[in-house]
Image (cartoon, rainbow, N blue to C red; front, side, top):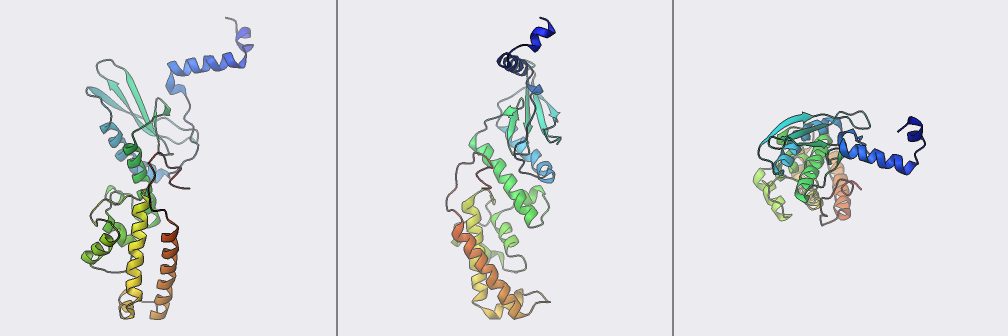
Length: 253
């Protein structure tokens, strides 16, 4: 076939040929990031964790694993892995995106809800670590409810047994892993913090134990009431049920 005849092909034929080429060489398909939802710091921190979780859900037995590092449309290097079936020598290419989704041969991979839910869990927990200026270590990403509660009431030294009771009143197990992607869990944490702050506000003699050195009791009381008002509004506005963990877009609206 001459070059001239190729140039004069209708658009439909060109599109057909393009798809035929991409179906035979799927890794030529560009990876377009539409809405990145992680910083590079978050991405690098959670990738090893979510990659291990995905691998545990793949039914392969005799395989060789290689690191796979393509680039997305924003010139960001992505992390992924290639599984070589040692029997058939077929290659399976998986890559994790800044949108918090997995691609298979550079196309969206439909993962089970519990896998996507785990990804959501890690991304949302990493956001909260950054907000509260915590390092993105595995220990912090897998913090439990009582550790998350301490972040919310930083500066207040309350016995763990007492904190556990406050959490229990809001339906949370102190030692259970905290999941920031759960609206129910987040609301319960804020409601617990609100109960603690109300308790302090109702016992003025305790305020001197929690105020900072450069703050008067009066200033601390005003700050405390402002924080109570903020939390009351937040708790009222938060939903009380969780939706299925389909993707991040529902989580951040």
